Length: 345
Image 1 (tube, helix red, strand yellow):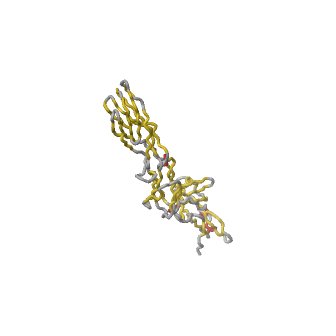
Image 2 (cartoon, helix red, strand yellow):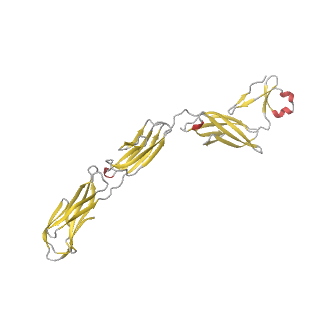
Image 3 (cartoon, one colour):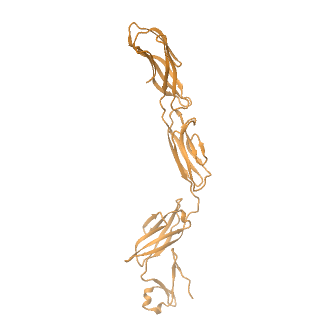
């Protein structure tokens, strides 16, 4: 209930007009505010007259013949306020109010309507491509159909949609470039300022050839005991777009967000093979590559020619019988495999 007006004749005779049952009916663009209006006399008075009470376009004629002084006339129903809201969350109304007869009164009746709730909405980036971005926005609640959801693009420097209701797709963007978008609820006629804002940013993807392993370097970090650590550096066709490296050592598999990784505590005099692949920034994976490596050799492998065929031996044995190892052939490890060295003649 809201007191609309208090018209005072004297301290003992006061006319009060009051609204009740306030409500909104319909929806934009036909939204209306309605309320019932009543009035009464209070104080210590005796009225013997026909009175016409008005508020705006409402009017009621009553006849009173009080024989004694009373304090309260009781409520009289005046009528119903029925005003358009147009595209507003709240309105202020002012009407002329009067009583003609006895007492003669006039003044202003005032009312501010209840504030209509703001809408709720969803807003997110639904997809990102090389040259395109899609924005999702949708009102979850829309009291009295009074609101709309708008989409603003910083690139275009304008609203690209005044009624966003689902996905909006942008095309023709530049690869690997950040773009900014604003999802904003407004009044349904797009008047005034935004009621709230969600800022969305996205960077377009790149389109480039899948990355693959070209070769792998390894560095032996000699230990003082019987083991070494081995540090690997993976080289690819496009190092700048490598997201991660995955390597398998037997049944063990690990992934690192770098092109370097280390195997620790590998026994000396060890030759073994691991497998390596890379994942690029578009989450594409390369093929597995075998990487053969060795730790520190306390005796080195050689190949000897006995006049008929090449046989495998070890350099440690050369000190025992030099005559058997006059001809040896070198092998070169390029990071991926052992290759025969060019014969020296």
